[in-house]
Image 1: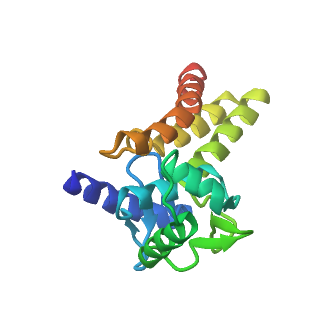
Image 2 (image 1 turned 90 degrees about the vertical axis):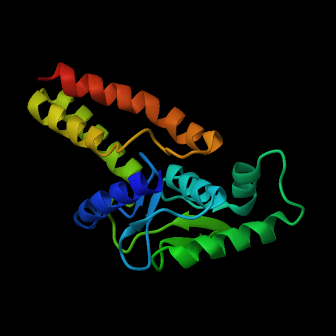
Image 3 (image 1 turned 120 degrees about the horizontal axis):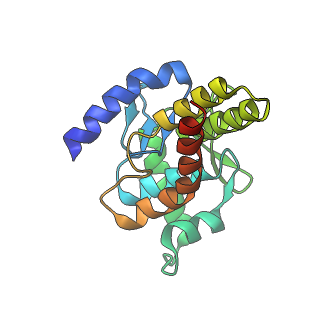
Length: 187
């Protein structure tokens, strides 16, 4: 598994700089590391934190919401302290400024206005495909849909821990089917 992720990360790292993508969740969870390449965050909770923030699409999640998302019905006694420790650990691995404090919680942030995550890039391409189809430009619609589908490197949030992969897979299933239909039916 580690070798497979390493190959995916090396492939993704050559693609990511030109795209502005710094966080990938449409496959194994990867983030831009301190050296500027995509790395796998350590630990299940670290990956879960990144996935939760990626799904928030640039909006800050409160400490309470993150504690609930990460620990569910069994939060630690000192939930905020445990979250701060987790965030510190993940920040130590990530590129500077990627995981930021915001409005009493945390968010993913970019250096510039780009598609910070592969999830956001897929959403933007999906919207472009819909707009192209609405204006009867089916060639462009198929191209946008195919580009969005190409961002999937494996099942969303692929990880050996079932609980970690469930949320991104559930949220990505409908758009992925719609993109496949759009890409195929417009040819």
